[in-house]
Length: 88
Image (tube, rainbow, N blue to C red):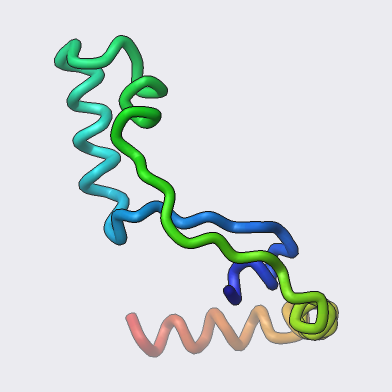
């Protein structure tokens, strides 16, 4: 739900929770000739799961947070580099 709200776009998840292995399988299936293209493999192998619509109140809140972030980031960029150096 948060992603739909942040992006202000409807979002439909795949039924499979782990996408990378399925993506690998689709590419391999297309490469092995089981499907004529990756697109065909996707159409055959992906099932849609839950859908989420943006919540107008949450969208407004996230937009306000984003405006603050846009203002803060340039001021904090150097601090982020220092923090990264400590954790490396």
